Structure formats: C-alpha cells, structure tokens
Length: 266
Image (cartoon, rainbow, N blue to C red; front, side):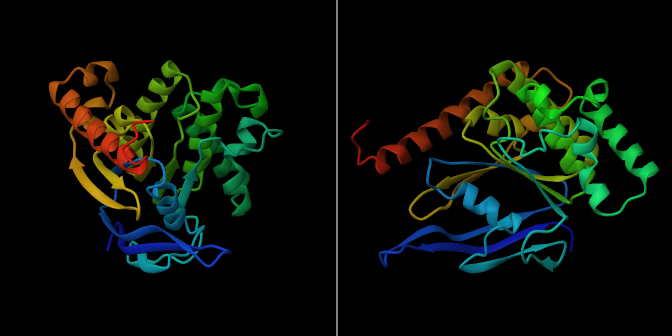
C-alpha cells in the first residue's frame, strides 16, 4: 500500500506534578503518495507534536502510523525533515552539506557528486556550492536544507515552519520553489505553518486543527497549489475563492484563540 496513514493518533504528556496534557486525540489522516498537505491551527493545537511523531522523534500514546504498508517505529531515512532553521553544518560547504546523507550511506564518490550537482541545479545554488553555509543568506540556507533532505531520497518530506524566519519576498520565492520541487519529485509533503496564506498556497489538502486536545477541526481540498506551479503566486492570491477560504479559516482560528484566551480578546 503506497502512502502515509495516520490512524487514531493520540499523545499525552505526563507532567512531574502528576497532571497531564492531552496534546493530540484520535487524529487520523490518509495521505496518498505525492500529496501535499498543509496543517494550520492556533498555538498549542499539536501541529509540531504531530510532525515529530510522524518523523519518529516521539512515540505516540495511542494509535499508529504506517508508511507504504510498514509501521513507523522511530526515525528512518524514508522520512526527511526540514526545520525552521536549517539545522545545517555551518562550517561545511554547501556541497558537503547536501552530500552528507549519501556519504553516510557509503555511496561512491561519482554518483554522490552527480546527485549533489543535480540538486544544486534544482535549488539554484550551483554557483555557491563551495561556499560555507554561514556565508549564505537565510533563504539560501533553506534551499540547502531542502536539497540535503532530497539527497537522502525520502518518500515523505516533513516541513516544520520552514519559511517562517524569512522576509516576505524571499518567503514567496521559496514557496514557489517548494511547489516546483513537489511537482518535479512527486514526494509526499506535510507542511506545518502559522500562515493561513501559505497554507492555502502550498496545501493541495489543508487541515485546520483545534486545541485542547489537538484534533482535526476541518479539512479542505484546494486548487491553489496546482495553480501556483510555475506561476506568479500573487496572481493566485487574486482568485476570488482564495480570499473566501482565507477569511473563513482566519475567522475559525480567531474564534479558537478567543476561546483559549477566555474571550478576553487580549
């Protein structure tokens, strides 16, 4: 069976004082291979916890995850992670960062070099391949992080606020790159974001989560990711349905935040 299945996932954190926090409850998602899912919700709804469980960094209290028919137990190379900060080896060159995974797997030098050069072409960093990571801008570092993730040939790419620290123009360019890579590689992608517009632009499917406990509140199937491939994303935002769905989701999340704050509006 091809794809990622999250089945009745729950996560409870037990605290030292004897109390507990139910971070997730009965979350089920069925992703076909090659789908792009964006996940939205107010702070504390369990978005990052969900991603960390899929990555294998956390073991759930209940439920299970299967990828291509095999149950997920701990981290594995078939799931690649891109963090908000690139988590790169800053003292290494761009080339060495991207080639790190293949080198750890014992890949021969020639095929490793071919993979690295191809990916650097894809993310537009070929002329920067000998630069140290610390010499690059934030947007360039995230391009390196994407290329490094792809070099490991994962089936699923997990992205935790990967563009959140970038300025508006760089963020828009990177959103276009994510869509390009999604279409060209056919990878399954789960993207966590706090930006409603970004979730709409990048999510072929979009899930809004609610807190206390974290659960799926509403799911959308959207046309905007396909529309945005190779197009000016600002034109996609002008689509009348884009504004309608954006306002609906913003109102939904605003109401959740108000409830969390006790209706104080602060």
